[in-house]
Length: 293
Image (cartoon, rainbow, N blue to C red; front, side, top):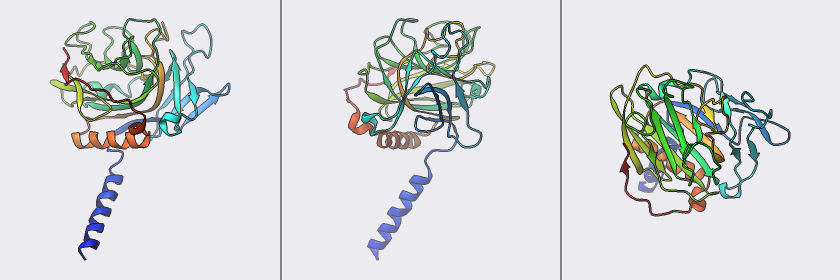
């Protein structure tokens, strides 16, 4: 009788755990295994999300490029390190969601959580230490918005700009920086911003649910971020590719709220299992979390 009770409880936990994925509030789910439109073989011209409701669409952007089509990333159909899952290879290229305001609330009070399964390559010359794999920074003024980047020597970092001042980096534009990653190896990067309209907390995670860097930021409810771009920090048509990264993206998810610690832990476990990261990661001894100004 006790055995049957134990098995019933275990099954109930498993069902509840499965039903809880993904956690509620999912705004964007870009999966390299789904929603791709290709041309010229394996060049990606459109990437459609698989999130609930009306999915977001990210498209190629020729504006500002001297060679049409040069901004298209490439599909890598089977990545052995990911257990055969695909990834998109970005070489200073971008896909852009043309909805101007869809992602504004992420940094103006609602908070957010984003997660990306990415591999960084050696970076080419652009703006020093700004090699963005996604962002919705405003085009002009004080460039407010959200972004995820790498330094020139492959250190991942995450930041939010509130637009109250212009600067790099300061209290209105913190940089949450992690140790360098080995080029070509896939890792799980996660950023989280608390909800609220005063001072809120930012956390940056790499491969685990323990924050490697934290910061605080004053939220500006009047900030006006722009289009979300994958592969660069914004819809930078005046110099496409100049602040973009070289690397690969297998998955990008964004929640329109901060996930709880328990949800974040579940997110880490789920994505590490799904993308075989426990087998592929080259773990290193990270220092304790450092607060960034």
